[in-house]
Image (cartoon, rainbow, N blue to C red):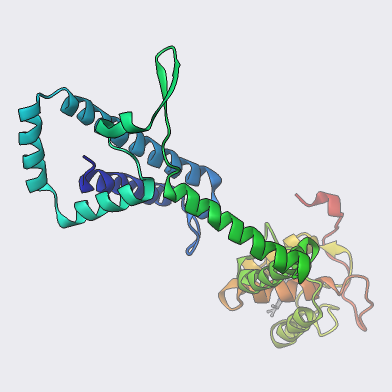
Length: 296
Ligand code: HEC
């Protein structure tokens, strides 16, 4: 008495559950909550189980009602049912029968064993083919696994781990490449990468030497090589000064209008490398001595 409708109802509920979880967890594009978040997968699985439980209960109820009908009513019902059943539902029915080889309730007496425990009786059902085939599959899997990993020694756990680490490192590099412009005065750190410091030097030579001199000694702008700072030292303050500019009317503009965050990061790091160097014609110190513990 299983109908196509009950399968469709279960599928629909699961699809709704999946769409719902995807909608309420906002993950970056290309990532799906049911794969990334164990809890989302668990939720969808629970929905599936509950939906199946409901359908099974309803089907059982129908069956009990059917059995309680008188013979001629049963016949009439069967006829009506046969008219209603579609080609598809008959195929599903046949498949289910082939995969479970279950006996109809009316024929169960044929396979009843003579055990009887307080009225609980035992049926000698055939092992359902779906179960038997799954079992054969595990045997095939085990054989393939054995040959591949224990005889031909394909990769072991350590190699697997190392490849994953290597992949992750590539992903980090890619992310860094894309994340260059996410830098701001809060999260900025000193760049160590030579190539990027050289970019910083170029940006400095093109934009800053007119006021700060090529060796950072200072002119219109203050000396950048000493530990005295007007607007605060340390990479975070230097980045902020370059991005937002100095006090108004002093001549230090907000470079965020001309430079990208990545470029300001590079030039700020380059400016920091002036610390402790001796310029040829240094401007006298201005501002206060910067102590790192002042930062934040
Ligand atoms: C037109 C001249 C001029 C140019 C060009 C210029 N600056 Fe400045 N800069 C100044 C002046 C003037 C100050 C001091 C601002 C103040 O006192 O508020 C300053 C301050 C600074 C400070 C803070 C110094 C401190 O003691 O706190 C940094 C860092 C700095 N500039 C970096 C740069 C960088 C990097 C560039 C190039 C991208 C640049 N400046 C371009 C004039 C200039």
